[in-house]
Amino acid sequence: MNESLSPATRSSRKGTFIGLLALLVTIESFSGVVQGFLNPILPALGPVFDIDAPTINGIFLIANVSFAVLTPLISRLGDSFGYKRVLLISTMLVAAGVGLLSFVPSLTAIIIGVILITCVVGFIPLMMGILRLTHPDETRRGVSYLIGTLMVMVGLGGLIAGILGAVDPLRGFWIGIPFAVAAVACALLLPDVPRPAKEPIAALPLVSCLLGIILFMTGLSMAPDWGWGTWKTLGCVLLGAALLAAWALMDSRKNDSVRRFTDLRMLKLRSIRSVSIATFFFGFASISYFGTNGLVLHSEHGSTGYGFGFSPMVIAVILAVTSLFSLFSSLNAGQIMNRISERVALVSSGALLAAGFVVFLIAGHSLVGYLIGFSIFNLALGSYQSATRALSVEGVPVEETSSAAGINELALSVGIACGAAVIKMLSSMNVDAQGAITADGIHFIWVTLAIAASIAALAGSRYPKRQFTRPVRQN
Image (cartoon, rainbow, N blue to C red; front, side):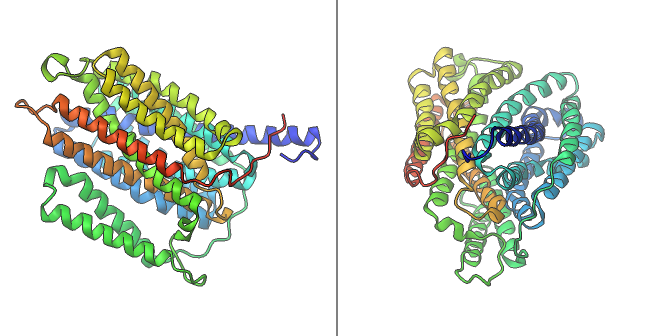
């Protein structure tokens, strides 16, 4: 911060930032709770609505595709129509989705509610736009607190939802109601910020991008069920990839007069390109593993050769407690970037993530060893989520903040989908007579994700050294 400012002015700005951050943290708490309660509750809805496992998987597929599709769309709308306005609308849509899930007991309401709550993907990009416009020197610190909040509330939301839903799964959604009310109130109280002057959205690139995402994500998600060599899988993946390539060509043209959906020329910046690649492999190696983590914790060692026989409630407790490691590393990621370098923050996150899987390989047969590895995993999770999101917008014009953050979120979503597809493929290739994944299959998954984490670290090492100099903040 500029040293010429008087102590009173610095104190006033600090107070304004803290007030803004409190509003944003409350809204992001709602996002964390909503993202946390889906995994424990949706599988338990089968007996409630008399639906089978494929239908439950279909709802998860709808959620995953919606997350990916809405990421660039909401981000771009924020750049065009104002971050506060779009954040308020997104918050109200998510709140409506929670209301449907909680109080309308029907399968149709569940599907619509799931689609509505996926609007949370726009929260972080839109909040980053607000932070850059109001407190540009505090963006990194603000993102650290937002990501730390997200990490903790995902774990806490899942735990509380599991407790409430132990008797009736639909009650598990109730945890979102008070957070929805608080988030909408905070969104209304957000200060007005200047609306970025952004060009109109081009329809053809938009359709090409969104339809490409839908086809590509559907093909990856359904490949284990349809078969990797079937015409449905190949058709979805190849046509989706072709549409995404067409979008990339249309939105990366040099001509300034061309209308775009998202200005992909930003990827020519080495900083943005290296962060986007790192984010893809971070998502591949981390969030895609959570399903396997639950499987390992739940499996009986005597019958599978791995696992600890924990109940879903114990697993939820473990996830909630280990999320504190993510909170710690997220809050410290900004300090590492400011005091050491951005490159170190990215590389160390990848190294930590790879180290977590190495610990699994060496000592994952014991509970202590596995918990140590999973704690390291969570340290890396909070660190990279904070670092990559903060760095994804540095170096781009302020009117493209949300779009740049949205590109990073899209890279994360596609990375998660690709990682999950590879894990499912490795799982199906290594099953025993009872249909359970073999111990060798689990080891192959750990090795594969450790390699992906190492690639993320390598991509992070390509980040320009100290490209953005940060002044020391005055107390």
